[in-house]
Amino acid sequence: MLNVYRQLAVVDQLYKIYDQFIDSLDIVCKKFCADCCTCNVTMTTLEANKIVSALDLDSRQTMLDKLKQQMEKQRFTPKITTNQLADICLSGDDPPKEEVDASWGPCPLLNDNACPVYHLRPFGCRCMVSTQRCADNGTAEIDEFTITVNHVFLQYIEHIDQNGFSGNLSDVMAHTIIKESSDPVTKSMIIQTTLLKNSPLSALLIPPEHRKKIEPILLALRAIKA
Ligand code: SF4
Ligand code: SF4
Image 1 (cartoon, helix red, strand yellow):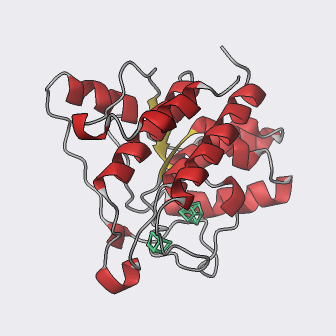
Image 2: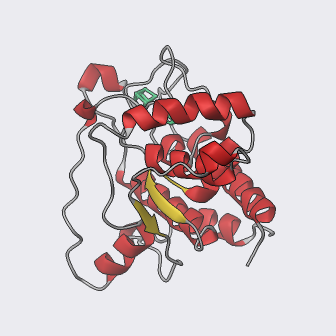
């Protein structure tokens, strides 16, 4: 199993491959366009580690205070992880019904319509792209192939972090800040988080019509050096 630094280096390479894919799309997303920054974003503990390790102690505490407030509010808390969803779908079973609503509010990290951790943001944020302004249509416009690509990247990231956890951004970030804290008061803090144990990737969820087109991306992912 890779140590966390090597895991994060793999995630960086993965983000780079995804950025190249996104550059080939005609998307309208830009800074301060933040309707997609809702309280429903999910992430892995590995991605939270990337953000938390870049923050000083004061920033961690400020962020934890915000996250604690958010955790008293309604937010999307997934019942299964991405790799578990893939396994269920590929076995022909129905996945559990999930409840998610953008009106539950913005991401607790959002500040004046800007993301304070933009360069470190998790893949769940990176993959929110649209070919039309969400503000104009009330929803993102994203083609089926991009949805397939997004799912593949989410599966890979969970696989890299297979000893970690997934969940709502607020839960995962709060859990990670407390776990990584050297302050005994913060460290002993008990918060109610809903985290799911990650699963390894057993098969990629790629519809037959996308298998040829996605091949160059899969080759690039398989060429990543750990
Ligand atoms: S996904 Fe929508 S709200 Fe988010 S940056 Fe793109 S256009 Fe803006
Ligand atoms: S972490 Fe940043 S990019 Fe992601 S939803 Fe929150 S504010 Fe938006």
